Image 1: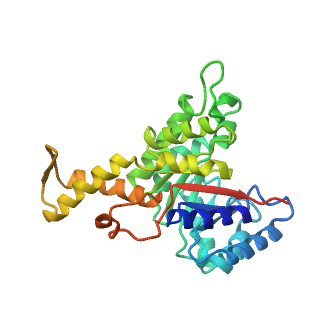
Image 2: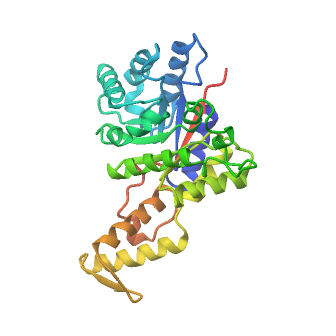
Image 3: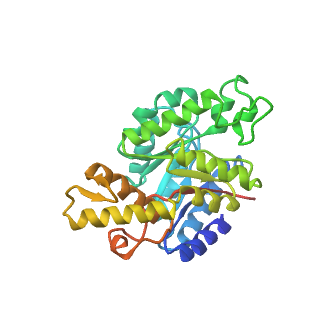
Length: 317
């Protein structure tokens, strides 16, 4: 966890912006019976993080005995220093409501919620979950999703390398449908869809291909990393190409000069529909630390609201 926070500080200095969040893990990171001590350690680490660091905490699921104490200890002590709370294994709107109630009890009622959808039943509730005002992002929990099918989905669907039948996490129909359902639900309600992990962290080519597919084909604007080596490939996949940034800057500069009336650029007509698209290109460039022309950079805050990479930093004992 300390290494992840240090890497975040170093890359923030390199890119001039915070380009990934660090999520300190209480769900899988805490040893059984040591949940309270682990939560206290997380509080200490958050308190030591830099002021502009984007740090989140993944607490236990709402039906776990440690859930309320996680929220009370962590959100109650350092909620004002967190970017959000991550709640795993959310099944329904009722789980979101329970998390909201726990945050209010801890005095952190304004802290955003990010949720993990990890079962077939939860996928069917994705639109209702995304509609909850407090929910800022939905992540797909791939491995729990596959495991919940009782062996009906092969293990290769948890990975990025196809098996002999060509099945991986981007080709199995049930997995692909779940990913698309979550992305669609998030975009319908203006929320951030966060793609699942790739466990082959030593395979750079597989990581780059997976990240690019998530960003280019499935509509995800954020992705989990489980190892520091994955952060830069994900960042590269979610960064607009230089040509896209140049085109967006040219079109929006012309639009701004025309008071946002329709304009012709290189023989193509553009109006407010395309302006919105190209503005989002520049937002993605800013979030990934990509330099913008001064005329456009002045429109953006230095700190991106949600970064394209979510790094899971498990506790090691």
